[in-house]
Length: 406
Figure 1 (spheres, rainbow, N blue to C red):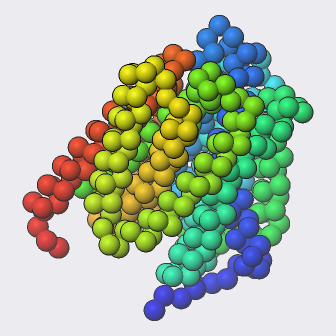
Figure 2 (spheres, one colour):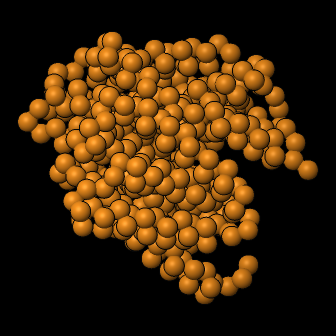
Figure 3 (cartoon, helix red, strand yellow):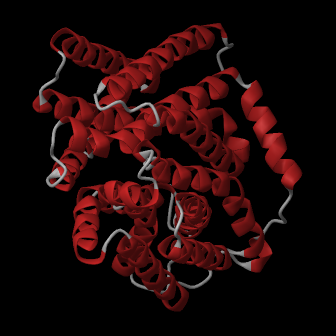
């Protein structure tokens, strides 16, 4: 029977709220920026406004790079010092972006901001793991994630309010305030959860050894590739969704309401996944979700090509399914990749998160530059990536059939 390992000095409700706020740093840093893209493009890159969405993937790229090291660093030096250092980097980067006068400096600051945000993303899970185990840990993580899923629903509206009153630079000031509140709260209320005797020295060789082992295992390798494609689909939508709403459907002023509502509805995918995964299995559920994505994207694209336009209702439904599909695939793919890597679980989690995030950002960034005032580049890119991911999942099934039973 699994039981709680220890107990945080703060109350459980406060601990869950603090961990949820740590997680929320990521969603707030991405989704609150969406309404600011037109203003940033107009001021910093008026000759080529299609570059503005790079602000989204620059953050993701930095976060992916940081994910490689924050876990091992927290194992070596403790949880709190890594989270404080990450918050300091995040705050400094936000201040640089706030004061920047060129688009290139904003991009560099966003990469640095992502590096800093990797601390809360990775280390908060480690903190929960330090204090709880088994079903108790799963329960805490579920509650934290449930709160976290609310952030994409309110972040764009909050960003819109800040922009209309303070301008786009006010978003970065809000990031600074948010991070300061979180890190001060954590510093004074959360004790260090990793005792010195339980720390492990930082060894880069172990990291590269884990990467080599994971990419030589066929199932793990395929899972990482498919997860990369699924995350690429999500990041591509995040890059291009605001320009589509503004230039194709003339819904710039109501964008934050539509995006938030669709994000909240799509959060139900996690609940549906929990209900279906036992019946269908992870690989089959992922394959079905990707097949439906192919059918829906192909239908939207064909309608657009035949009449030169797709209704907003159809596009909004398609957008919701992209988010919904992410909830049905990314977590399951992570579980498939982790299953054979139990002996290096912590290192494997860092590698999977870092590799898939960095590669997904690298794929989505050039796609974001293809926007031509229609939905064609967005829907077409999702269709191609879903088709490739579907083929890899079918291949995974054949590979599993050839592997010896364990």
